[in-house]
Image (cartoon, rainbow, N blue to C red; front, side, top):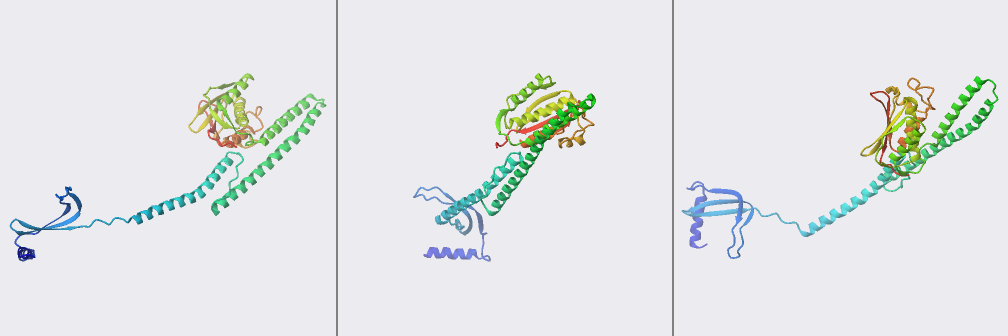
Length: 360
């Protein structure tokens, strides 16, 4: 140091000694700015946290010391590139694994939904991870077994129904030789009931889920059915509705609606039919003016051959398979049937049919 610098340093040492300090030493912690370089025309730049110590030396002279926190080092380019590559590789691997797992599960769910709607479930590809392959194999085996069982039952009922027609025809011919009119009338009545029961069993044997799915206008189908019944003199009214596109098995839907309307006419005197288009389903409502059904019996009426003699007339009662078939058709299309008594009297039947039904 020069002589002046040496004297200044000595003065600073004397002032920094606490016992000899005559003036307080100030310290400031905060955000500072780097002074601009007038030669290069650069503006002042803000810097990070700093500790600034100001020491008075002589009169108007101060010693200012700044301790700056160095900026964090930037990541090397190699590290950034490696991180991006690792992220992309991990994402692609995760997407591939997820596809191998999710796609078979989606196919399994779609097949299970189709089976629940009553249609033949398409076979699920047995691929993917081991657990997925085993689940697909078990599902395929289950659907094959269920299909074989249902087909065997269907063939058995159909064979029994067809075989019953021959003795019924023979009995009908034999009644013609009965001389007593009262006995002949009773036999003919019994034979007629047996004939109706046989036809009902054959209708049930044909079952649901075997027709081709077609897109139709559900409102037009209902209007046509109600018009046909009205021309036959049946007391049925229909509230017109806008076109309602619907994918279904038309013969089955027509059979279910006819059963509901004929039940309403037979047990309630008349049938009032309407339809409501909801967000995800169509709701068909059939109302009558009969005695209704007790709440405790509303589930039993869907069982085969069940007739509620207490609330329904035994003289006009059918085989007890009508509502059973309606429920099977509704569930075969992913829908449901709900029975409720009207406040003003009578029974209200709600047939819910979802708009989206997978084609088979």
